[in-house]
Length: 125
Image (tube, rainbow, N blue to C red):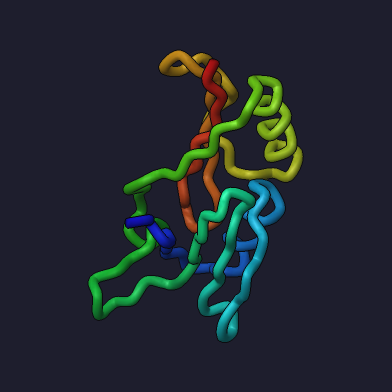
């Protein structure tokens, strides 16, 4: 069995989609409706869906509930790549939680994507 996709609930699909495409190497497969749902993919074949929460299923987004309940993580091949991405995100006025630092044996920083999605970016030796 293979995990097919992840679906992240956000209030502004276009902003989150564009952020992940611009800064994290995702490609748009399609956007349905009036920015009602976006399907993204990466070069490893991960499918990431960005959608609005569905109230009848008890869904919510992290902006509405006012806290981060999960995070997604990206691993980079070199410590310098972590620093470079941090610099690009800072130049783009992204919401950055911390500067790269030694955490749990790696080199890591955290930022937020639109929709208050906490993103971990790191390198491990």
